[in-house]
Length: 66
Image (cartoon, rainbow, N blue to C red; front, side, top):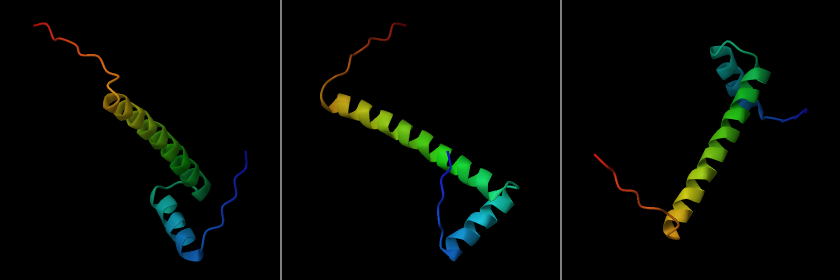
């Protein structure tokens, strides 16, 4: 899949600087950033569902046995 994003000059320079600092290409840096955000979004959604279930009383109490 090909994704094309046009950055303004300031953002493009910042992106290039971050990629250079990490010693990878801008393309690889961007790809990793997008994948990391997808992972974080999925994790946040999972937490949101868990908190919603908690609010709705959809939870089970467990007793710890020593």
